[in-house]
Image (cartoon, rainbow, N blue to C red; front, side):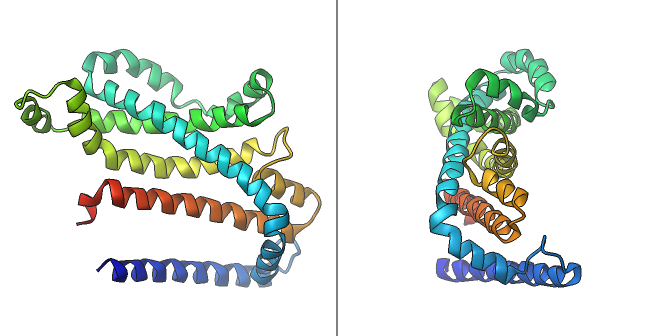
Length: 251
């Protein structure tokens, strides 16, 4: 059964890739401009540059996104569960969340660059801050809307606060947490590209913009392919994590 499901999923992915490449090829023929090379040209450049130029930049970018996702999860999930479970904490924190959440976190990039320097720390902090709010709000809402019957049934067994978090709130909110991570991944990749275009010479975002400024469009699209594959790989990791941690959903 699992083998059939894996084959079906692989077939869908392959079909999507083929459709995307065909559309890309037709668009490049219609526009007929060096700024949009054919898929063959872009992929040839990708394989040619992968080990020599792309891999070092991908490693840096993967590190920045991975660390940011980890920190945002470690901070956002416990805080979201606590706020969602405790009504007073929710009432106290709600105004602060409502005021700060809509503010685009990228506006703080110049401040972080000044205070934290142009290295990895400023970039990781900005990406983490952006994802943190998404995870916090999603987790809080999931915990706040948890049916009271679940809590009362475990309380009747004399469960303490820690056991309520462990056996009720966290498992019940886990699907929503993983969904927020998926959404956060897409946002993280966007913020990553932005932060790697300022005051840095490392990262796949820098590679793409440097290739663009040099009019090396084949290298630019090779970088875009690399960034897309990195995001796709991280998404597959989250998908696999959901199947392991939330196995009841896929029964």
